[in-house]
Length: 105
Image (cartoon, rainbow, N blue to C red; front, side, top):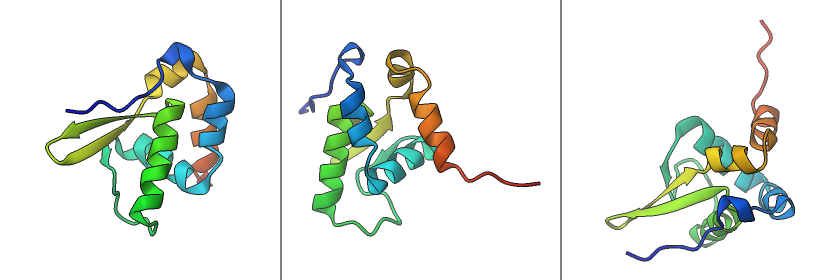
């Protein structure tokens, strides 16, 4: 099983994380991971070419936002929320809060 490189939490760089979050497709991927948990590399409902999607996952992984594990032929992606919150407290929560529509009641 090939392990994909990803930074250790102490190596997370704010500028790199912000760059990774600076794309609407990557923001949507992070939002989905936060809401739904682990997903495959090809989540349903996105109209993005697979090659482009692979590039988005790579950027998120190299920034430390996600981890990828292999299960058979599938690659499963998980949000590294605990590691991000430990290194950059409040950042992910603020980004996700901004992406979640408020409901007036």
